[in-house]
Amino acid sequence: MAVLVKYGLDYFLDRTKIGILTRIRKKPKNYQALTLPERLRLALEELGPTFIKFGQILSTRPDFLPPVFIGELEKLQDQVLAFDSFQAQEIIVRELTRPIDKLFKHFEAKPVAAASLSQVHRAVLLSGEMVAVKIQRPGIKETIELDLEILKDLAGLLENHLHNDWVYHPKLMVTEFEKAIRKELDFTNEAHNFEKFRINFKDIEYIKVPKIYWNMTTTKVLTMEFIEGIKINEIIQEKYKGVFEPAEVAKRGAEAILKQILEDGFFHADPHPANLFVQPPAMIVMLDAGMAGYLDEETIINGAKLLQAIVSKNLDQTLRSLENLGIIIKEFDRNLLRQDLKELFDRYLGIPLKNLQISKVSQDILEIMVRHNLALPANLVLMIKALSIIETTGRQLYPDFDMLSAAKPFIQKLLRKKFAPQELLKKSSIIFQESIELIEQLPQDLIDILRKIKEGKLKFGFEHQGLEKLTQEIDRSSNRLSFSLIIASLIIGSSLILQQRVGPFIFGYPILGIIGYLLASFLGLGLIISILKSGKWK
Image 1 (cartoon, one colour):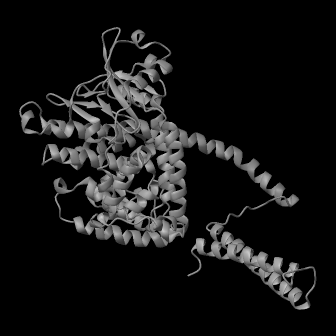
Image 2 (cartoon, one colour; image 1 turned 180 degrees about the vertical axis):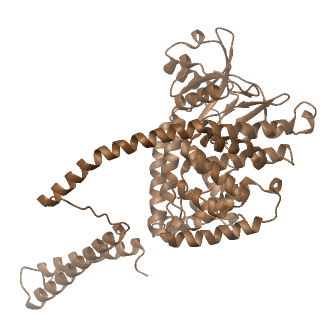
Image 3 (tube, one colour; image 1 turned 135 degrees about the horizontal axis):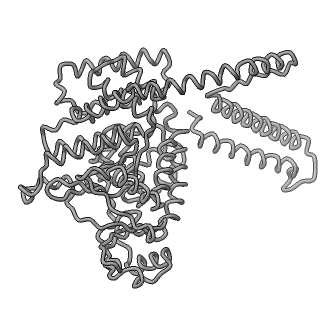
């Protein structure tokens, strides 16, 4: 609450009638020169590791927040001090059950990197191989569990009391974050991701993925090959001129992410420049595989069709692809959505393909989706974000970089494969087999239904939607009405006792009457506080 007050964000608490404590502190005015997204970023940084990571993960989900917030949250940095090397070694010994000198020939006390969840030390194995040892920050799991409870409470307040008609969903944000952070806390998940990338890129010579040392990896310690390199967005600096080939790096980076998405169905969900190194002249090194996305074959094909529809500005195909991706569009919504998409495509009409940006077009489409309260599948949003990051980085390296042209061969290859004779034969065989099974089972199913009708045992289930809040409001109103009647009865009864002067007495007044008034006052005060806290008194 103190941090929210500091950055002028206690507005949310005031609106829910629980911010009375925040008004005790005098609000500083220095935040007023900052925008709301800037204040949110600064508040998250001050609140610590969990909230920083929350903001970082939210920055990968443009379907959760408006673009101005996403742009600001992308600036979040893990500005944390490294924890003591002695603690790091204690964790290694406890996790790997061997002394440090039995594990490493040399272990560097000073970490090469420190983040909110972990830090990395360089070491040399007994065999002479140089490795990076990633160690989980002590006590971070307990801190995150507590912070998750706080986030859930805040999300509940925002969703239930502040913005009932808000198109963004605070509870869903926290749920998605909780899933992502729990995966990152288990380092074996990241190790498995690295192994999958190594297998998928085994035939690609310009992509390097660190080797995992499984005998020295646990949920809290990750040991992998140490690979030197320069951050991908730094290779265009003047001092590296002639050392790297930025245009080739941009091309290879695009091909790598397109292969992951459209061929493998498994992709790096946060290919941020800090997670990609480059070795001269154009070797790309993948780092930090904690966040990864998965796509099944059907989603890949529909995602490719969606990209193809966007490139060709085909409105009908765009709508079909969105429906095939599992987005439920009512007829009324469909007409409004069609109109918004038509306006969007008209805006891009006549613009050459090389000048179209996936990041910009995707962001425009996501904004339309959010406006219509339609949610894209999480992994599809991660896919769009990954493509956008690579496209942005590619244009930094090479201004004439064209992501859509790079995507065309992959899309065409995927669609050719889908309609290849062997694939069609395979699908025909499956459809034929399932049809035979359906025909065989159908008579028995019909007999079962007719028997239930005859015996009067056929039942239909109905499910109501959206009536939960109405039910809660009716229950709350009934309870308050009951309390009001009880209070009124106590006041009337106590007044009659006082009037009739029914003993015993205290200070000249009937005790029962006084008790009745006190009880009515106590219940009345509780009822007033309840109404004020609910925000329904206006």
